[in-house]
Image 1 (cartoon, helix red, strand yellow):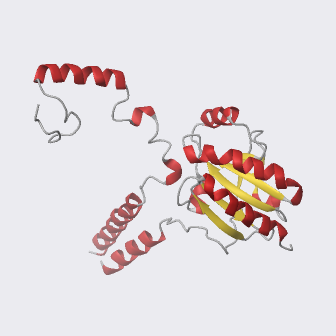
Image 2 (spheres, rainbow over the protein chains, first blue to last red):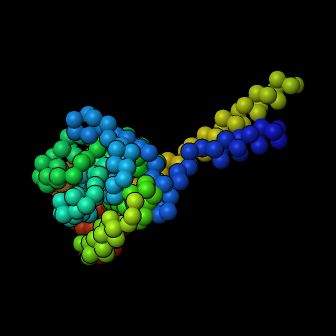
Image 3 (tube, rainbow over the protein chains, first blue to last red):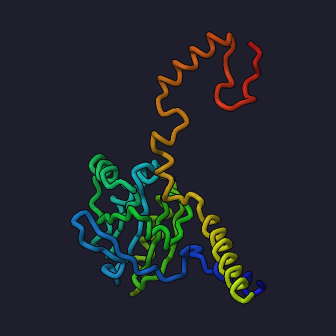
Length: 164
Length: 76
């Protein structure tokens, strides 16, 4: 009986408890399909500074953040910045409607099953991960307020300036 | 006896690991869209709900406290 309880306890501990990705860790090598059903992964942007933005159509601050991220992307794409939008809507049509209303120029991938947010163990919606050219997470941005933009912009600028 | 012990162990494992999985059933931040769906609302049809409240208030000659038992001051 003691063995059984021990085994059960071990199983409980082994159950998939998420591990939140924090600054200083390597970003998990995930991949998801884009609008054209082509798989897009973080490894495709190796050597670039990537800002992974988790968003959903039902999340108001996400919708507020996207034009700001789009502006940063267009401003600094030439310096090697990529904003990767990860949509977590379970219904693709809702995501498409949101994108039609507010089009963005940065790449967007669709993860209706929520495997990316599960792997990152997202603390809130939206959350942004700034990943350096070496694939290491520099900064985790929880939530979004317009007042966060200047500090975030400065941080991205600094990360873009780092030697690869 | 040995078989019984084995069966007991198997049962304990399955039951307790069941506890572990149900403990992880919290709604995650990225799943909250489901809660935002209209069918998850307390009142999926606000107009109909308002109409029903109107009828109830007229019949009861009192207003408020329509949501949860024990609510409302009952003072009018």
